[in-house]
Length: 396
Image (cartoon, rainbow, N blue to C red):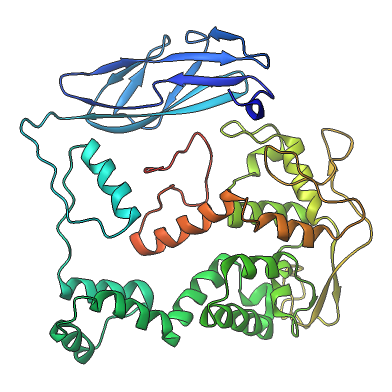
């Protein structure tokens, strides 16, 4: 194994992926633990097996048995290590011939390769009438007018589909539609932000989409935001999240596809994250503070309602206590490299830079998965904000 992987015991399961055709109805797994010095030991009978659906069952000695045709993921656990195995049992189709349209891009190539392995022919290419309807609904949220549809159908240009997509991306309705999606994700609602805050935050989001602001820049501005929630509307990102634990959980789920909540009280049972990871990450947000300039809330008994301008700022000191340590866990980013912000620096700015770095593939994958979900109705990873080794992508 590469030296970068020889930090702790590594779990290796073979095979990691397999497609089996009828009459094959079972497959044996071999599970090995590799220690820091490269020593291997067979732990197949000591591992624990869990399966994602009723298509399969797994014996205590690691044999996967078909119960029905279809795909399934088996999670293999040994001590604190986990590894996913994806299997598919398919009906044999004598004489099957794979037929597909010509791939238009690398995405088509990946999709067609998976379908070929499962002996499934893709659907034929949608006709122009179906395409124009789908493109409008997906990109601007409404159907084309009768005149727009007729004009598209009558256009003999072979590149008209790509041209239509480009035109839709330039329309103001595209910015309106996708700003609504981002507003939902960022908790842009009136009870916690008040009406003026909602309007300003929505305008900030919509303007970024309309101007084709890069997604990494958009997220950097949110994470590093501070100042008046009226004159610096991106600061409203923190206004709805009043404590560092909520900020940490929300940011991890939104931007990294990591559900940290389980690690608050114990090491995550389905992922790699520990309590130290949880509280170290939350500590990055511990110094966010609020100066409430005014609060004209309607319900005097509701301490969560705010109506008035606030100033979001970063205090000079303050940490989140880790109850398991009896003190704070030093702030650190989520990842295997143990990266931490510099001492005495601006935690939010350093977090924003780390989060959106070109080296942070998890950020890119999470955002691409959200876009795929909005276009296709289901993520490549599902649920769309639950990236972990034990929940692999349907098409890695």
